[in-house]
Image (cartoon, rainbow, N blue to C red; front, side, top):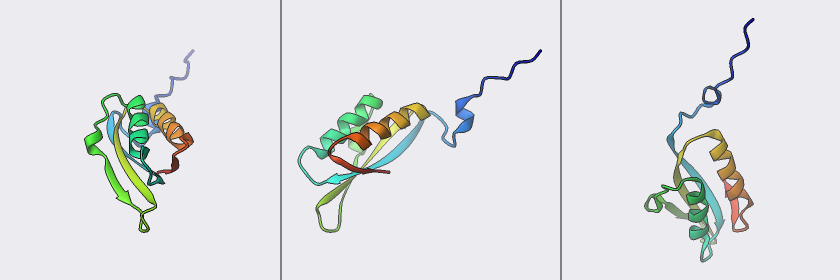
Length: 95
């Protein structure tokens, strides 16, 4: 009797782990926003390098786009990171 093989979650993803993975986070351009995003990133990627952060102001200058590039190790890590960023009170959008 054969039992079905346990599915390998890495085969269900288009991403190969580990890999560098950029995430764009947008929020109001206020003091502490970049620091808040950096702290969340470090919770999920302890080796996160803040020197890789890219910033882009909105056209009117009221909002700030912050691109962080983390080392993604699993789909679960990415899902948890997206949830943490999306629920942060300073964050408006996560892409």
